[in-house]
Length: 317
Image 1 (tube, rainbow, N blue to C red):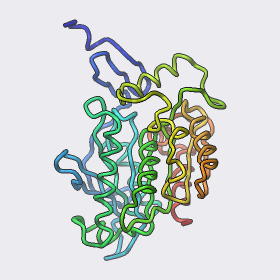
Image 2 (tube, rainbow, N blue to C red; image 1 turned 45 degrees about the vertical axis):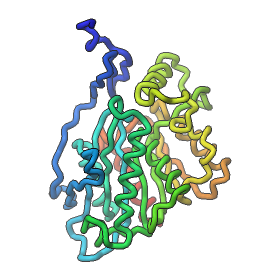
Image 3 (cartoon, one colour; image 1 turned 90 degrees about the vertical axis):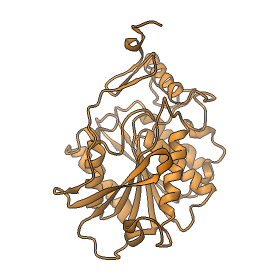
């Protein structure tokens, strides 16, 4: 065995991650695991609760501290990004983001941890996320295992959201809900933030950078080695025969001007409208910004505007 193999780079996707030839992934965006807590900045409380003990998987619940007994709040289920191979619901940037989101919107939220590639390739992250949703939905009658969800989640006002790979997951969770309804759950809206979609053929305004396209395609094959290719419905919604079944009637798609997947976000809204889906879709584009900028620079003017848009989307319901 070549002793230098572990240091040989296969895909350099800086500034986000590097995939090495031996299969291990190095995350370049520094972040740390943080425990649940009462956040003094937002007055939001959080706790971790298992949803799949057999796979050692939990989700992190967030609740405003001043919530009255049995007060019902809209429920947000959030799926973190990271290309299906890095990041965590328990990383500091996601913990901080969810604290802010919950406080500003006055909602209860569940942030889902799922297994990732290469040990658990796509569609494992999607399957884990669906398991989490079914566990959350088991509280719709007020008799589930978690008191916060029993007492405070309004299951007639449920929202899915996620960024990057998490946006991909949120889309697919919307499709699964459309095809196999979560009992007692009304998904009133889905928010996709810089969703990770791709395709074999370029679309309008897509990148023509050959090397960048190869990197993206290499990362997809790394995380989903059994894929049929870049028109696999898991990564290209245009080839999904069930696209019109998206289980909500309101959708917000957020894109960033300098993001490599920006064009795919716009394209997604076009094909969704043509699919026969009968809902309303809105797009918000952040000028001068790159992929998931709101997580790395949350106090910037554009990040604050993005959060306000999330809040208004939920509260206008």
